[in-house]
Image (tube, rainbow, N blue to C red; front, side, top):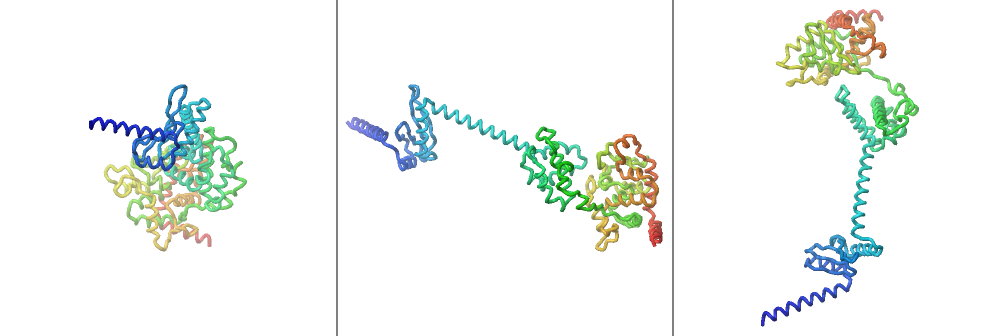
Length: 459
């Protein structure tokens, strides 16, 4: 009897819930009911009518579903998760699906097609954006640098190019399509700096011109290069010669070089040896500091500099005749050479070249607070200026032809045709001149006499 009573009670409860469900299906839901049902989380289905149902899955989780008939078959279409999708949003989505059904359109297939079209459009937009980004001045500039940097002899050129463009060009041109850059755009970069930092501005113009030329070669632009000087910005900017006088590196008058060499010989350290060789050979500081023992031929008294370490468009190795003074300096360096060291003038504790800052620091120590080694304008001298000192000595104290003096400095003389036929490096004639220079810089007393005679001659 108790069991029979329990069975009747269960059937009564089930009938009650079924009846309530049927009653609920005939009435519209309210937002309050939806929030309460989701918050409570009891598993149940709440109908909003017209096939729209809220399925409560767990506390805080629900799912909107639309049931409909299509071609005689019952279908279900998810309309989103609740409560993220509100009751009003679910009703709007259900209404749109019903309108599609009234036109004979399957709303599920239509949604899939719409999502596929959206993904395709997004992919096309991303591809277009990617192609557009590859056409920007900044992208082409970086590509140009990467393509040409391996051919640059100075590794620092890469960073110099990039830093100058990042500072002055990219803020104005970086995001622009290279095919749309005009002369006005280029002038917007150059005009603010043309008169204040003309040397830098000129380099930036050349770099912009090269990048746009590269873009033209890739078929990304056509027409006249707006960064070119002639036919480009020339008419809008004054020539550099009219806004800034070229100032050369401070150089010690050649008459004072012997006295300076005498003072330099009293200075200890690798930097002093390297600077003495700079003066004795007339080479650039970078060429001397990069010297390796494998380049020195003591028996032939010759130093062969690889073309890759020479400045400019040098295509062959450069032979340097070593005077007696230069050989003596190298002998002093050899006496200090560490075992198996390959660098002639190494940094302290390492087989790598000395920094050029070491020479500048040496000159600063020698000058002190009251500098005595100054150029004709009263400026403190720098290591590179001794090349000018040597060249002035050649012009004023000797009668050697210009091409020999220039060849000693590693300068390329003449046009392409002349260079094609002048294949000799004039080594013997240069050796004679460098020996005379070596004797001159090693004789302070005779130098004093020269200065005295010059002063007497000038009154």
